[in-house]
Length: 481
Ligand code: NDP
Image 1 (cartoon, rainbow, N blue to C red):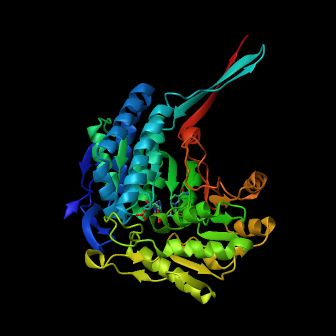
Image 2 (cartoon, rainbow, N blue to C red):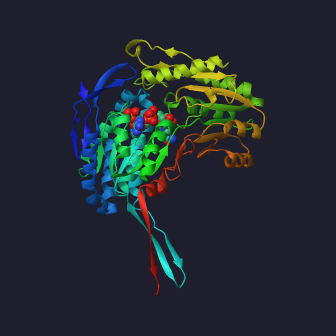
Image 3 (tube, rainbow, N blue to C red):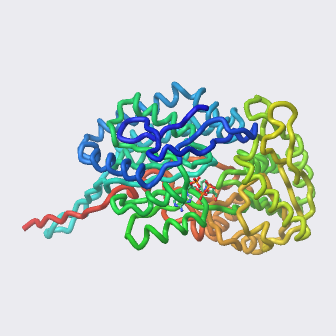
């Protein structure tokens, strides 16, 4: 059986305990590789390596750091077919999606922050006749990056790139459920000549490896993406230690369709924002509010497209819907579907496991599922399901839909479909969301602030927000006297 290794101090190493965890191919339902079940001792070694590497890496020039990060980006692109294949097998997502989105974006994350540091400005504040202040930004030291399973390499590199670019050294943990591309990435870092110890990747369970990273006194900042409950656990450990914390957490995003929208575009985009990556994207719009005047026609068009989505082997070109990431997650989503039915939800599409013919017949597939007839405040419309399950709800006025949209504990993103610019601006101001997409979805400029409010997170990633997070700020005040 193939083994995945930790990447510590520039080398690929076995876990000290020699204990291993099973890694599943979710589309087949079988174990296909083993991953380290790492412990405190592995995290300690990773931390030591990162600490030793810090003086050299933090004192390297921005040009040297940018060159290595760009080399990593180039190698990701050179190996994109292998990486996309590995991501699809490990996660269950359609290969076409991994090729189009996950892997190119991982390369862009590296090259974006490689060039961002070359173009960064620092601030100065003049006090006429008195003094001049300038702002120094210094790397923090050893930082921890912990990422989830839904967009494995994409979100892993989204954290690592700014952390390394700003001169920090890193101890990182990918999700134990999807570790393969992080392992391939460690080989890329070796081939790109990243100095030893600058990046260390420790595989294993969140409750062991993630916890040890979070509580290690020498790891000064934690950048975490994952569920809200895990974020809470991390904050409980890290906040009393005064660590810098960036938390990108769950969402229950509203997708709001006004009658004056471009209906065809709204329908097509809503299918994508509902079911891309089997609904396992934190930015998916799982609550679809449709103005009553067009509710019926939207519903008909939406359901027609949903029912035509091909479910099946993620490696097949025709598959638009792959498998869910694990059996455990499939069962969790099925439980949510049962709750929705008990709460009076009317099933318009899906609702069942899907069994493809052939080699994927034991995989964790679920039909794209659409409900109507549920109230905006029932648990289906309040709890994050993180699977291919959406609800349709009619509304009559802007005030009413704002109340519905803002009713959850989350505040990650919102989509608004309208041709009325004034309304779009009014809605953007009043929606409790870190991101509002007007007449589009998932259009990303990496310079923009990315993150959520309420229980969707603390802080923002992207562009200068990430560069600021991964640096300590010193104001230097020089007297003119
Ligand atoms: P989890 O919170 O379960 O896990 C995220 C990461 O944290 C994993 O690497 C996990 O390891 C690790 N972890 C688990 N427990 C601890 C702990 N006690 N201390 C430190 N680390 C720990 O999230 P999922 O992987 O299930 O991802 C899905 C969630 O991520 C959804 O809620 C989704 O909304 C959210 N998400 C948010 C995004 C955003 O930008 N706001 C983007 C993408 C996803 P292990 O896998 O071994 O448990």
